[in-house]
Image (tube, rainbow, N blue to C red; front, side, top):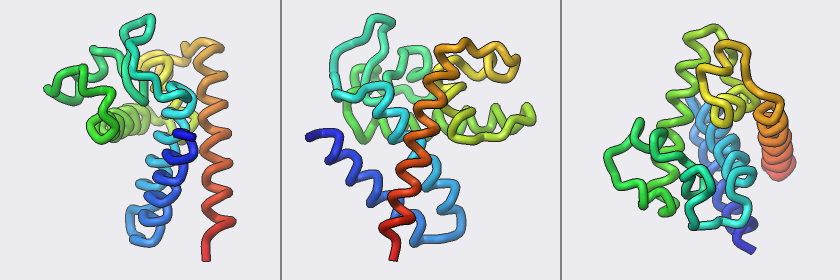
Length: 152
């Protein structure tokens, strides 16, 4: 099953990040959050363009993609390229939240990913985005608990 293969990949990346130390806690939370976003956004790994023009494992819209790369939007379906852009977008959202006095928790990152940074900063995220962020946040907590349970 594709989801399990990707799950194993991210658990391995998370364990590696935890083993490195230093800024690993931040990097590991980022990767777990991005994995959860991927599972909510594109659980079946569709490579088709979505109804609002979104594409790839993180369901980027063309405008979001162009914020972070000059690479063609068609590359959003390539996992490595999508991961690179996802990290950049995550960090951009994190900086935007923190500069506005909002904790960059997995919930708030997911909320901004879905509703947009401006809506989160202005307290105007719709209920659907809040449900999305709760789903992502719950997945993050479950993944982190699995990693802790499997740690030596």
